[in-house]
Length: 419
Image 1: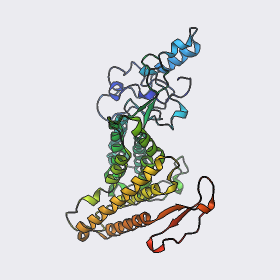
Image 2: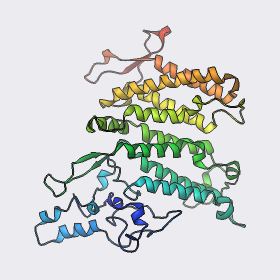
Image 3: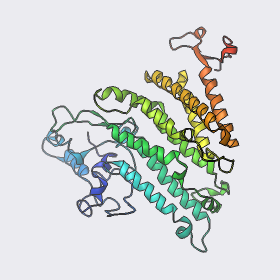
């Protein structure tokens, strides 16, 4: 319930509007405790509150009161449900509570995440004009862009925690204004978080890369903290962007997040709104494969492809993630069966969209897009045609090694076990 330890929910006691308004600015600490890692308060526009904590918070005072009171400590603990005394520590940061995180900020971290992206875009727009001055090395463009990319990826990670999330409380039964131990994050907040992750990860324009900017990213090979001496002189565009997108896919589609969404469907009464597994997987799929539902106005070329190189990489990664989720080893939880079933259905829907796109747009596709879609369709069909069984000869209560039977023309032919 409390302790003189890290308190990673302390940053959530006020909204950004309160923090940047007269109610808090210069009068109250920004958070409930100094023992939280809080993002810097730096809005691009509007009223500006304090940048950081001005002193110890109300939770800190409460913990000290509990530890050093001469009265009954049980009386002190009765305040546990007061909003300013919210608490979660180190071992809670890997759990389902999205407020128990480092470097988030405000009661609704989506507001803070959006402000961080606004700040990143503000600085990106000034990299060439203001950040690098006459006489400066062009290395500053690369360094500055990577700083904005770090801000963006941290915001993405912050909001991904809200999908499948649940607020966790340690109030005891009978405490004044006591809360239930588990409260599922409202569906609207989860959807807003998912939209943020999708918009900031999967759209090409989210990264603000232009030809001029990419050609201006110099590199000074110093033996400093950046360890740039071993880096490539040309910034690896596709590798870096794919790394961010792959990480976002992991945050959205990992078995733990999917299991939490599935379990939350039961926690929420059936007459109330809830984010579901089909909605999550379909939303991600539709965002990643959106090009398949719109016909190009003119003939595409390799220089102006129907599907960009960044999006082709993302789509290939998405297919592999869905295929992984269909495999028997995708997780040991009871949710894995439902996840596998839905992932298979998503793959079938992608094939249908590819077929429809090829029928409607075959004469307008560029070579890159045509080859990409043919490969994606072939990869999916081979995965869906594969049958997986457990080898009974291996024995043991947990089953044996997986044997893969590939396609109708090889039905019954066993591929050797791969230990």
